[in-house]
Length: 347
Length: 279
Ligand SMILES: Nc1ncnc2c1ncn2[C@@H]1O[C@H](COP(=O)(O)OP(=O)(O)OP(=O)(O)O)[C@@H](O)[C@H]1O
Ligand SMILES: [Mg+2]
Image (cartoon, rainbow over all chains, first blue to last red; front, top):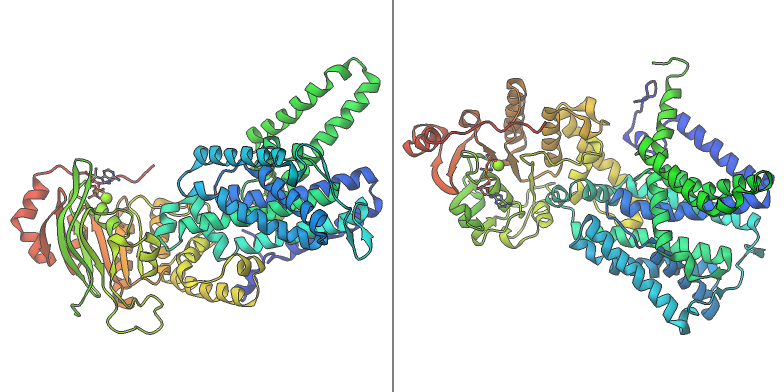
């Protein structure tokens, strides 16, 4: 517990960031986010955009897996529904992307309701298998309903424009991506400090007790699936409009597992962990890549085994995280803050 | 004492395969009383409470939660019609004003004490995903308003210092108390406590007994508690029902039960051990 700050009203203590230090940290972070695009190279800007997009997806998945305890291997499918949904709405119906994105979110939420139905009966690994089936079905539909999705061909969509700014430029997209991620984080934070979010966690921790206290467990699970899918659908739509090219390969089981890795490494059931995890998983391959490239010039022999080393290093780093800090980066961050709380005293 | 029943059991029978956990049980729980259900290990006490809260479905009989005679003011749980509990989902039974604690403590371990209690207010709060996610005016006001109710219970049960503690880290006796607080947060009209004092030391038992009495006297909440140690309930209860192998072998005041030959026989004829708290 932090000492030295006292509240006079519950409303003050119940604020999202009740402590001055917390607000200061957030302010600094916001400042860095605003300055960043002006000093970053295009390469780093594109990485930042990918982080922003992945953060929204990680928040969505964390809502379902981390907070509500419902394991899902269907992330790729939900992303695909959002991406194709929004892409086709702009392509075939000429909707502006700022309208097609939320609609795609709603479509994905509806799909989440259906894919979430097995959760009423199944738990843990059994549920994971059921969502895996959904993942496979969606993949099949996308690659076979050629009249709708173009099948295995890439779907090219018009590049998005907002107030006359073309968002296919990384600098412009950045503001849109970051704002969406910030709104998503705020939404999840609010949800988790009020009635609905509490019932999510209650179901995860003790579903029988939750029921005995008046939580409609079945309904709440479906609400969690729908809400999570809404955010993930928006993520898929963001990917579509950022890339302006949609291909099914982007939304396979691989993607589902990558997102699971994100929230596990970042921290299950945490908001900052969703961001940390997204950052790490986006940056890690890029970092390994650049290390590999510098090796290529210095030690050309290493170049041949490079692809395998990259895969292995990625896996190894994730395993190391799981072993050394099972509660994820969010926990590491908490430890660091705790260190400074009593600074300069070490006790 | 008012004698209109809050809850009636009529010929309730619950079987698990070959085991008859409850065997034709009938009794009334009267408004405002502390009603104890006692019996040796495996007598069917937990099965009885689970049947009332809808977690178990008896194959036979009726469990009726009676409506409150006049709409009590301010109590959001005033049910207007009788509820057949055998056909009601647990969350709807809770909505009708039945709250409970569990023999093996079923708290939300990763939540704070406050959040556990706020979850106890779940049925009184409204607001869906949109309202909660935006946390706008009405939602915010409701959360604060119910926080005040929760704080009142925190004061009452003397757990002020634990407010922000994660429940899973608390000592066993304190967890039991938090679980009672969570049930109380529902503002129930019927409170079910499954062995509220099991595994506690003498001092903790005394505290718990005091809380149960205060809840009953100050708040007028009808309480059904189970206990396998006869001594504990003698001073506490208005009436006691004794179960043995799923059968109701006696019911009456503590004085009547203490001298009932069938009860003495059931208790002396069986070796029963104190349930140890989970390590
Ligand atoms: N879910 C269940 N599945 C199978 N049998 C059960 C179940 N719950 C209870 N039983 C059986 O029903 C009988 C009554 O058990 P119950 O738990 O109600 O007893 P109890 O009086 O609460 O005992 P204790 O003092 O040990 O808590 C026992 O024989 C028990 O094995
Ligand atoms: Mg029991």
